[in-house]
Length: 307
Image (cartoon, rainbow, N blue to C red):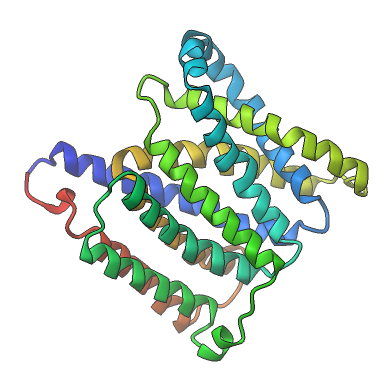
């Protein structure tokens, strides 16, 4: 039986969200791993400046055509750029200076989908069905199981630090960004939208970048740092944000937000493939819980109903 338009939208949105989480899965590790080499605001500024420069040649012609529309929605553009570009990842990089990578992943990936779902229900009136709530809880259990290595004592010893508060702020601002994306004026093309928020977000970062370089040790450039910034600027920014925003338009803010629970699962797979870390029963159980939670959360969507 051919797929209905609703079913196509769901499967396309799901694939786009999964692609995004695969790309984003290394971000929390990078935030901690490079924290001693590049200051947080500097890293964020280089990332978004590179993304803006790379996307400019492809977006500029359309941008000139849509410039008046952008100006008419300048407040919307500003707040979307501030939450999704200026604050979101910058606070992840700031948090990397004060807390562990496991705390970054634990708090960021468990709180963000919850914030997105609640804000989408309140501001966008997106319906939260019982299966979606159950699925969200199962996803959270899967992530907690993974990050605690199946040991409840690990969670019992958990304490909030300054970095933990920063990552909570980051997750909350990302949830706000998701709500803004859902409200994007249809006449603004996706490419122009990304170019505009990347550029505005980078401009907002600039004064803080200047302050930081005046009060921090200079960056000691090497191939490792350049490759990371290329990955963040092109992969984590342009490709991932394009896919994520497109997924939000197809699944809604809360539907896409739930896929963020896959990030620690993919981070584990990447660690096994690229770092030679051991794959254990804990990883298997956690992955099955998250995937099962996602299936349950979306089981009542029209995508699964006959056309």
